[in-house]
Length: 356
Image (cartoon, rainbow, N blue to C red; front, side):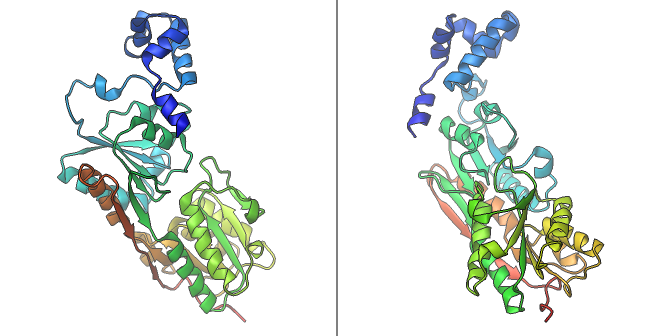
């Protein structure tokens, strides 16, 4: 908190003094770069980054008075993945519908490698909805420094800010218990990325696995707590992590199938990973669910119509977005409101009894 407070006090005048130029010259580095040499501008910008100055307040630069009429949505994915992921799209639809009713626009800000987080720092918005970022993500830190209304979705609570949460652990635990009741005792997990810059591949030691994502931590805890209830230790569970794509699901399932003992059940942290897993297992001549049972998470539209229909944890994807929008709209009367959403296990044909 103290570092954030210190950074927030840095002004353009502070930067100008540190560089040894006038305030108007420092301002030109942001507003009129054509009026100065590249060398001087680079000195100003580099000094600003070093001191933690994010640039002139975009609200002050706006030609409009009062509210801008737009909300910044900061997502954990790349822009391409955010607008194509079947679990993110219903969230965006619910969010957009509620914002439109309130005559608010939406600015989509992907989680990209930006050390000074300029996409957030200079966004012309009235506030932010932050969707499933790591606790120490630079974009989250930049949003907090803006001191604008903030709604957190599927990540750690921060005092004074609104929050939309999901029973991640409960849904994951129900999924694992379902497989245990079917007699499965050898498990593999296909995990979403545990860190912002996670490398795809096997996780060798769960005890030493550094997990920054609250979603991954909660779902993993749900799985492992259920397995521990019958004496299955984390060390006995093979884990493969990667982005939520069918390619990763296929590669991960093929790796899991090579482990000894081979898992008779795979817990995937998304339906997309589960669909890819089924493809990968079939390429090895394995049948679903006779040889391996597979579960997903999200219950996207594809889950019910897939072959075989996918057992999945249903979450209210559209309502999650709508709830985030409503909390933002209500920010003046309820700045730290909370909405907690439930999950439901939907059992379909991708899971079956373990072979004796």
